[in-house]
Length: 287
Image (cartoon, rainbow, N blue to C red; front, top):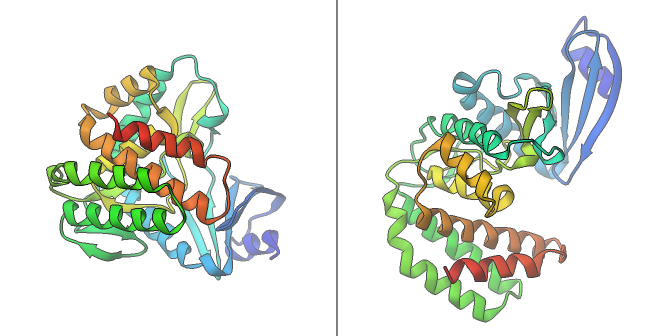
């Protein structure tokens, strides 16, 4: 695909100065297009993942009113590609801020804004909610059953499987504490948060391809499990920005995210982190 031609066709009058490939993953290849005006981002989807394109457009549309300026704006969609505005900033994962608590306060505030966007039911989002369920208990019990089944099929440790199953069964009443679904980013980690390193202000976030309609604390739990871990400063900042967190429910969701990640890595043959993820799960069920 001629990326420069794609941009000039979609945005008449735009002069392309340079095209730089930024990332090439399993789902899409991302290009930064520098122009005579503001830079643009072009995402080209692999054929088997083109359905993710309509999801991304839909989710950014849901976010637009509440978070305009903190997310990319969809400029144009075409056959297997999307053109977006480029957010300023550097991924937080590449930086070492002088005050992690202040940084995570901003993350908490952003997550709170995302979670103001109500959803009618629970489930995986595309341009609609797939296989929706009416309450969090049904949704999370389905999700745990699915991921535990995959864990078993993929050769996960039988003893750990039994411990996770028992742990979830003993605490499944916690799922009912959530009464309404909201939009969840579901991948809100430091690699997807952009920061101005001159001011240490968060400029926004990207990558909504994992979005779901669910309990907002499942979103918080993923940020903790993927980025904050048990870092006291980060956790304090997240609470400062978001509010008090129900530790028992968050820990249950942390277990879910680790289980899901173990399944994913094992399914694609990435074995590097399997032992450490299994240890994380073992630690969580012992809490």
